[in-house]
Amino acid sequence: MAIVACLLLPVVGLLLYGMDRVEDWLTRPPQPPRRLPARHGAARHLRLIRGGGQAAGTQAHTGRRSSDAA
Image 1: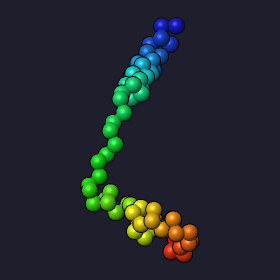
Image 2 (image 1 turned 180 degrees about the vertical axis):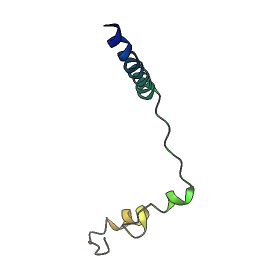
Image 3 (image 1 turned 135 degrees about the vertical axis):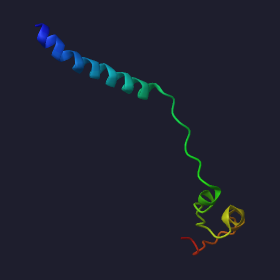
Image 4 (image 1 turned 180 degrees about the horizontal axis):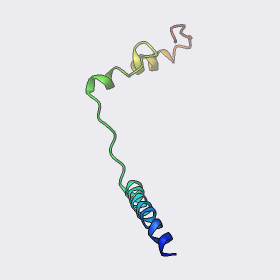
């Protein structure tokens, strides 16, 4: 029985070490999102309607449907 205990001791040690690492990984606070350079964010804005939101409000009251939509 002492031989089995000596053989299981390294396994139990590795298990405790692994569980400690997993617990630290699960309980740490989330990291803030990465900041991208300004040029990447500016290129991702889509322009589906010509003129953006400024001209859309004035054309909606005319009653005509525009065929310029994407």
